[in-house]
Length: 388
Ligand code: NDP
Image (cartoon, rainbow, N blue to C red):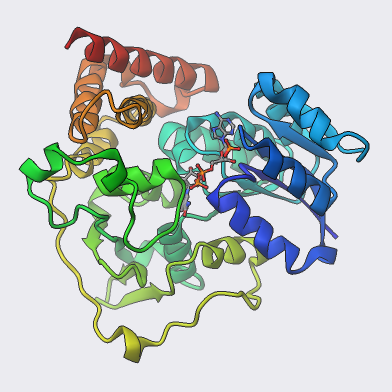
C-alpha cells in the first residue's frame, strides 16, 4: 500500500485527488489530510479514508475538529506547526494543494524526507522555486507538476532530450473577461470574476484566471520547474481549454497535449507516474469539438503577463514579492475594497518599490529570506491601499 498525505484536502484539487483515491481505496494508506475552515468535510474524509491525522490550519477550529473526530481514533491537530508535523510524517506521495504561499513550508518539509511531492501549489515555485528544487535534489525527492499546463509539458518531454526544445507554449482559456475592453475591466465585479468559462476551481485561482495572474504565475512556474529561459516560454489564448500546452523542438515539430478540462487528468498522471492508468475523465470527441481556436495574449489589458517577464528578469526574491503582493491585492479585491485592475496596479507598484531589495543571488535564498520578502510585500500593498 502506498502511504499518501493530502495537503489542502478540502479544496478543489484536494477533493479531486480524494475522488481518485476512493476509486482504488485498498491501494492507499492515508497518513494525513489537512484543510482550513471546512471542518465538516475534513473530518468526514478523514473518517472515510481512515487517515491517521487530520489537521486544520486554524488553531481556533481545533475544538470543532476534535469534536467531529471524537471516538474515531484519528488524531486532530491545528495550526502552522501541526501542518509541518504532518509534512514530517513519512509518506510515499504527498499532494501539495494548499492555496497560496502557505503551501511552501509544508512542501519544503515533506521534501526533506525524500518523498514524491505532487505540486499543485504553484505559489511555492513562484515564491521560492530555486529553494524548492534544490531541496528536492539534495534529499533525493521528486517534485511532479500537477498544474495542467506543466503536467502537459512534462508529458511532452517524456523520452525527449530537453536541450532540443526550442520553446514551450502554455495555453490560457482567457477567462471570463477575454473579450473585455480596459474600460469594462475597470468595472469588473467579484461575482463576474468568479465565473470561469471552462474550469471548475477554487475561488482564488478562478479570480487569478480572470486577471491572468494565474497565467503569470504559470510562466514563472515553467521557468522554475523545467529551467527554460524566459524567452522560450510563450502563452497562447485558447478559449476551449482542450490543448493544455505544446512543446516545440528544434526541427519545428510541436507536440501538443490535449484533454478535457478536468484536473483529475493531471492529478492522476502524478499519482500513477511513471505508469499510466485508467482515469475517470471524459474522452475528447474532437469531431464534436470541431475547431480549436487560438489568439495572442494581450499584455495591455492583462498586465500580469508583462509583470511575469519583469519578475523573471529581476530574479532573486522578485517571485516572492510578486506572489505575496498579488495575494494581498486579491484579498482586497475579494473584500471588495479595490477594483479589478487595482490588483495588477498595486502588485506592480510594490514590485517596483522593492526592486533593489529583492535582487540577490538565488543561492542566498532561504525560507527566512522568502518569508521576510513575502511579509514586506503584503505590508506595502496594505500601506498603498490605505494611503488612497
Ligand atoms: P481551494 O481554495 O479550492 O482549496 C484550498 C485548500 O487550502 C483548502 O483545503 C483550504 O481549506 C486550504 N487552505 C486555505 N488557506 C489555507 C492556509 N492558510 N493554510 C493551510 N491551508 C489552507 O484551492 P484549489 O484547490 O483551487 O487550489 C489549490 C492549489 O492548487 C492552488 O495553489 C492553485 O493555484 C493550484 N491549482 C488549482 C487548480 C484547480 O483546478 N483548482 C489547477 C491548478 C493548480 P478550507 O477550504 O477547508 O478552508
